[in-house]
Length: 251
Image 1: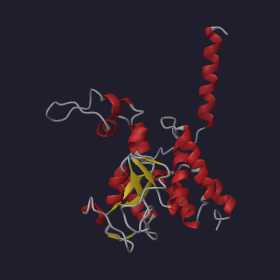
Image 2 (image 1 turned 45 degrees about the horizontal axis):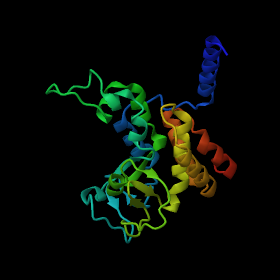
Image 3 (image 1 turned 90 degrees about the vertical axis):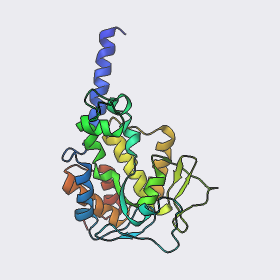
Image 4 (image 1 turned 90 degrees about the horizontal axis):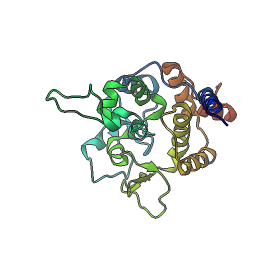
């Protein structure tokens, strides 16, 4: 095959991949605005965190479930925070501004910086991705802090340090409670399908496919996606298709 033919094949593959991808968030670049919309227009009548099932009020104050405990981030345990299920760092490192910085990323002392702050300042594509509400869920602040940017896996020999909340964290890995696994899986699958800058590893994809099949959608998961679709103006075909199959979409 000559060079021209190879170029044509590569171009065709690129077009095909774009055609297979879903449209992502293209309406809101503000992470702060996304959190406010979630608080007031999505979770206003279902104030419950994803990992521990803790309730929170309109002032973001957490009412922890009976038996919940934490020895770290005590102050953050009292407030709800918005967790990127697919961590921002996991997709942020695909952007050169995160990895290497940018000429525009200089603080008031003339010192260059990189990472999340630089990507957020310079790259609108990153900002849209960071603010995608399908990837944001409420979590107890302390749990959000300790989960960090760790990938999900199974940790059968680990005991949860959050007491009654079965969120396990060990050796820079995390195992979520059974109640959260389906939602987590479908969020990973949506991000993987929607944004070319993010791709799951083979091992992560196998786990998420298994969780998607094992832990079906609930009525609330479907209602949440409907509300976000209305606000964000893009579809989440992964979850919607499961909701339609379960008979939850038109009710």
